[in-house]
Image (cartoon, rainbow, N blue to C red; front, side, top):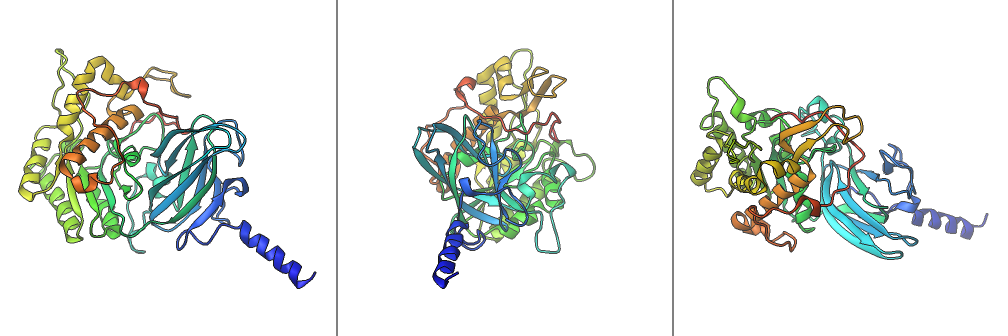
Length: 416
């Protein structure tokens, strides 16, 4: 073999490889050449369908990268067929919803994705719950889900995000968390679709958490280890905190102390704290009026926001308006209310008045967006151009499109 032939072969191999390491440089992956994911390759098709499957099934693509924020550009479309593609990342964070491309048409979309593991500093780690151990949010990989009617993606480009891009850290409970399985969803995994590619959302919320247990589990410490000046720290608690009993508990005692810790720690790092009052439960009285079920906790957060001069998104008031506009019957369509047999293996009906389905989660996210416009205008500048939303006039459920993930769980999330 001549030296020239060897050179040509080596050059061909080099050009066929992904460009560089996603931890340090931009890397492009062509999906028609990608392998199955393995620890050896560190990238490839993952979790479900075989590479190249074109029967309309969802497929996943993972890349092993260190903790951090990544700029992801997907080239959607197919040379030989029309496609409609939804793109979500990690634990079902929505970024692109039902984008249609004609045969031979391609469309690029760019967004920022936060990737993390439980490790904090090599010696300490977040004490995640047993049910979190298989969550895509906490593993070693950045995973993308391609869903929709005949989804198609030609290539994926991943690069470290601009360090100047602000990160929005979300802290909260099951009404905020990235839910992995159908039919559950929360506003934290929908809000990602409203921001442009200059902001990254890092959702640290988890089902069943209170403000003080969030801190005790190391979740705040992990977020603080990644935080930089100019970032944002959102806090929505109250659902589970109100159930705590014993000395020192209560809205104006341990709850205030914990929230003050969040605020102080964020400001110490040059970040901006934002308080969010808890979403209402679907709890109507016999006259069709929504009942307040959070006691003093929403008002305590309003008091703290005034005292500490912290922006406050009053989701408690907005969701009261939203659910009353829907009414006792129609509001069920925003929550996990499904007759038996709606999902595979669902032997019993689901009737949950706290946890949202994807439509409900999206409507709550729209409330958050309006709150941002009013209370956090600097961050609102990074929102996409979306029409105004009035909670008194919710979107009709049938106008919301959602492609079900292949993963389903009938187990109710922690908390209520």
